[in-house]
Every structure is written in structure tokens, then in C-alpha cells.
Length: 114
Length: 115
Image (cartoon, rainbow over all chains, first blue to last red; front, side, top):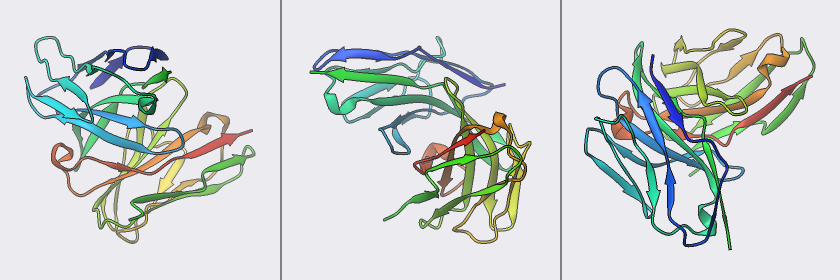
């Protein structure tokens, strides 16, 4: 079945450091890929998405490129801020019955310090 | 714009008790989902619904029941709480089947502890 593997956290960075959170996936067919972010006390929010190979999703300075050859969708940001501290989830879409379904990774906690 | 509202935010249950986790959305979304998140694990789909009166099982439905009498509400029922149901529960909704176009809107979660 479908699965998503994310790097273990927590990731601790100083403000303005470069961020990479690794994500690889296993899926049949050609899924769409997503990054969701969860800020403390809140629900998950869609951060960015990519629907086909070589697509680059971007939002709020974050980027991720859909790499079919390596089955990866790594999240990057050039300069993190304290406000980026959150848990980040990689996910892929698949079909279950009559609905689509998201399969999530375990989440990676990012802590940014001054 | 409330989005997806879950209540309660926290709850402690004793083994064998029952409760209903409430989920309501005000976006006129057809599709609604219940996920659970265990520590160090990803989110797993419990049940989903594609519209009022239509529900179906996800990956981990045992011990839970759902109903969808209106477009807005999708409550999750635990009949006989067990320690294995200690988790954080997320409700989500989406406009249509194609999450590629619409994405999911999530509630803020219910943290449930069964002792």
C-alpha cells in the first residue's frame, strides 16, 4: 500500500538557517504530493502541493519538488524564522472507495531559535 | 469563517465509557473524514463520508461508528472506550473527490485519553 517516510525530528535550527526536511514515498500510480503544517494548538494547514513529476510547489518561502525518479518530495526553505516553528507533515493522495484519501508521514517537528 | 470545528478539545474517559466527538463544517463541503494520530505515527483514516447519508470505513474503523445526517456535521462515536483509543483525533473536510485541486481543511483536533 501507499506509504510516506519522513525524517525523524525534532529539527532545531537558528533563525535564518537553511531548512531541509526529507520525505520519500511509496505509491502505485502517480499520486499528488503535499506538505501540511501544524502550528501549536491548531489543525493541519495545507502548505504546498505538487500534482505531477518535476512540479515545484511553493508557498511562504517553502519549496518542494516532485522527484519521481527518487520518489521524493523534500521540503526546503532558505531562511527560517521563529514563526516557522511547527510540525510538518508530508502526504500523498490516493483513492479509497468513492473518496480520495491522504496518506501521511509521521510528522517532523521544527524548532527555530533566535 | 469558522471552517472545521471540533469539540471537545480534550477529554479523559474511563475504560468502557462511551462518547461522541463532534465535528462541524460551514463550508458546504461534501467530503468529510476522521483521522487519528498516535504518538510518533502518521495520521490514519478511521471513517469518511462523501455526502449526507453516506459513510464508509477507512483503515482503522474498529471500535468506532459514524453518522452523517446533514452536510455540516460528522460525529464520531466511541461505544466502549479502550486504552488503545488514546490518541489525537482530527476531522477534515474537502469540497470534492480530487484532493489535488481542493485540499483538505482540518479541525484543531480532540485529544482523548482512555484510562
